[in-house]
Image (cartoon, rainbow, N blue to C red; front, top):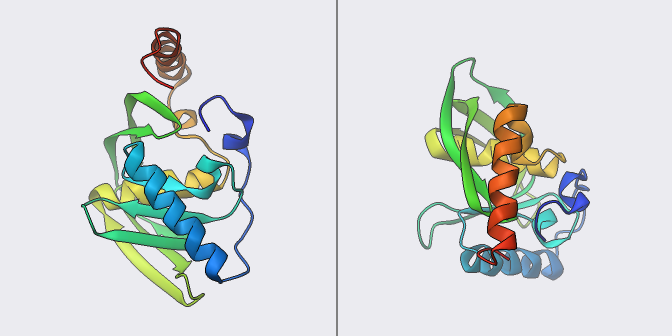
Length: 162
């Protein structure tokens, strides 16, 4: 689904069943993300309102997070360029915490924690925001957001993005 689909602003439901259907959904997300292309995707990006994230920052280093949540964030912040598979063709710098710790479950339901910095920390915050119904452009100033939306609409009208 693509911006401005209102489902991108919906809060995702927790995953409660750790079964073959969840594994299939994770596989579908990976395929969709690679086709986009992107480095991260959530189930809501494909219209499934579940708290599931797939990341692949390097080829064949697939990371799957079920029910991820932020449990700690550094006071220090940094800026990174972000975009979305649901809003292809446009990117902008977003300020986020430099380091984070998340809690999540794996595909078997086992509880885990992970500490991250750099680009991985950015990805965790970006995707958890998406699960919480916060589309990444909401982190921009109104002026930057409006300009980005205009650029995106021009690309769509020109047929350069889906």
